[in-house]
Image (cartoon, rainbow, N blue to C red; front, side):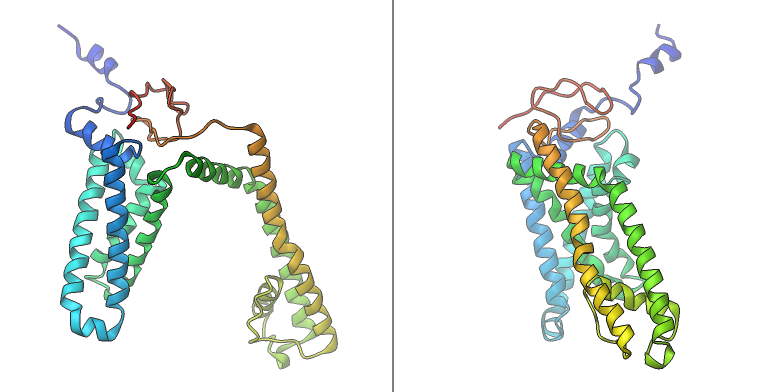
Length: 292
């Protein structure tokens, strides 16, 4: 007879192995390489687009007055479908909380949350448009390997550049703080620079070449400083682009292998090669790769 301790020792870290309907649901919902998975995701994308169209039409007063009841019914239907789909995603993974806190998990929750919150605060109904973020899955679905690889390359380049960009943004913040304070001293409240925060706001809009025009310098010295900041803004905007581009170029030289949507049943990470046997993140055994 097996003792409880030995039985628990054989239990995987993240719960029982996926099997039966949970495994079938997982394959369809999370694996875009299979025929059923691709059909499921394409249908999901179509419903997201239709739900967004419904919300936009409902915001037009004339259409709402004439077809408001039908549009509301459609939105309730879409929300019900997305809710069931979200619950199925939680049910067929080993660690529901890990998925719920992942990027796509949060997006899936935000896709249904505004409709329920609208029962208490009707103005939040328009936030249903955050469902457009679910269209990010199109890179997995239509999934030409090139798209998935480029998406992963961009994400990796942004992660690798995060410290450099943070230092750059910090430097920009110091510049606008100093220049805003200088403009507050030079122009003063009489010319619209009523406080240092207001002057910093002007410096940010000027540095980013947005220039709303609600605050403008009136003195010659102030205009000279503004001209300098505008010219500086051109160079500033190019820096983050150069940092990320350099990282992406370095990654291309490394010639990373082609990515797939094959995912690990344990940690839910994607991008494993077709011939991989183990997850490169957690080391778990990968299920057999299903091809069309």
